[in-house]
Each structure stands twice: as structure tokens, then as C-alpha cells.
Length: 356
Image 1: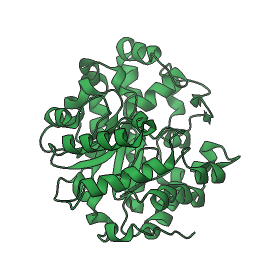
Image 2: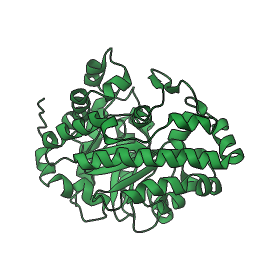
Image 3: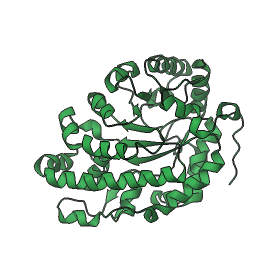
């Protein structure tokens, strides 16, 4: 596997552990605001569609050479300041014994949802051997990337539980909430198991050499602050605190979480990801002055004329200055129809406009 990353070498002179991205995550001085994009390695890139053609998602996640190639594609094309490991949040759950598939156009679909205490027996503990392909992929990538940091990631217990209880994606999460409120002991037992699986999955990635980790709680925004604190926060905090001594920054992101930002800050991450609905200066006041923020350009802005994109990028950068550290990102993932050239221009603009 070979890579060419012309034009980015000057921005990536620091070792990965002291890169601009990692320093921003830690609230340390940086020469410019680092930028990467959620779902940057994905369907918006023609090179991704080419190498993924005919290969199911879960299979792709289990092929280290393919994972490495896909992870590197946006680094080559866009010159981003970090790469995120190509994988899926349900990979460790499948490795822990749950029969599921990722169906194109739908997402994760679970053959037998977890609804009773007996169903928990199908969800066993995760061992490093269960996800050896992830370890191998990270070890392939780290030397290839050199000074560019690699971000590992996992799904948070609530979001994973919602897929397992609902049986797939849900707009209302009605079955999930019914279990939370009506069977709290079962709910906490399920989330406790998922927290241990998630923690082990992230530890594998850290041991293999990632420079940071991100915990995705994609659907936590469906909850009130009270329910989040009672049913979700303890389990996310268990994961994040379990990595406290790992030596890598911990990022925590959820979608539609304006009402939860203070609680999410309390969960123990070093960086809180913010979606586009909340200005970063407002978010900084909510998560606390000792945490960096990540975000938060609306992904749909990328479809607007360039002067609009430039204006909004500069606005996000200005709002991000309120935080001790800011990592520029979208407020959610790159949409499949996004023009890759616009992403490349955004990276260049962020670096230029934020230069100290």
C-alpha cells in the first residue's frame, strides 16, 4: 500500500502524538485550527465507491488492507489534519455474538432484537481476538500515516442499545424508551454490557496506536436531560473514564444534543462534538471552560455557493475561539452527494483563515 500526500507535509511536521489536531484537543496552542470531517472516508469519494464496489459493509470493515486504503483516501485528497478509522459502530457488537447486518440504504438490522433478560445471553464479552482485524488495520495505518494522527472510534452504549432493542434504525426509539422506563434493571444490564464491549473495542485501537478516540452517541439527542442523566450518562462515563489513563484525547459526539451538552461534558471527554444547531461559543459555556469543542458546520452548507460556504466557515471559526481548543468539523457526517472539491477547499480555507 502506498500513499501520496503532496501539499500536506508542511502542515504535518509534528509527530502524531503532538500534532496540531491532538494539541487542539488538549487545549494547547496551535498554529492553525485543525480540520477533519465525520464520514470523510465514505460515499462522497469516487475512489471509495470504486474500492467498495460489490463488498458488503461488514466485510469491508473486516479486511485490514481495505480499511487502511479507505481510511487514507480523504487524507490524500483533502489534506485533512486527522484520519478516522474506517469501520462501523456495530462492528464490536457483531463480534460479540449478535446476528446483524448493515443493509444498504437502511443501516444496521438485527436478526433477533434484545427484549428480555434471556436475550442478554447472546451478547457476550468482547475479547481482543474477536476484533483482531481492527488491530491489524490500525497497525498498518499508523506507520503509513506518519505524523498524521489516526482517530479510533466506537458507538456509545445508548446508541448501540437502541439498535439492539429496536432491531434497526428508528425515528421514535419507542421500544428503547419503553425498556428504559419499564424495565430499568434490564436496561442498565444491557448498557453495562455494551459499555464493557465499547471500552474493550477502544482499548484495542489505542493499544494498536491510534492518537485519539471518538465516542459516537448518535441518537442520544432523542432524550431529555433527566433521562440522559439517569439512563445513559453512567454508561458513557464508564467508557470515557476507562480510557482516562490511555494517553489519548477522548471526543464525545451526539446529534441534536443541545439540551444535553452540560451533561455530556460531565461524562468525562476531553472534547465535546457539537452539531450545527448550537453555536460553538454557546456550547463552550455549557460543556465547561476546560474542554475543547469540535464542529460544527452544517453539512448542507457545502451545497451552497462558495461565498456562502466561506462565510459560514469563518463564522464557525470565530465562534470556536471561545473554547480552549477547537477542532473544525461538520455538525454531522459528510453527505454522500457532497462535491469532494468543496471539502478540499474548506480544508484550505480553515488553515488559511485560522493561521495564528
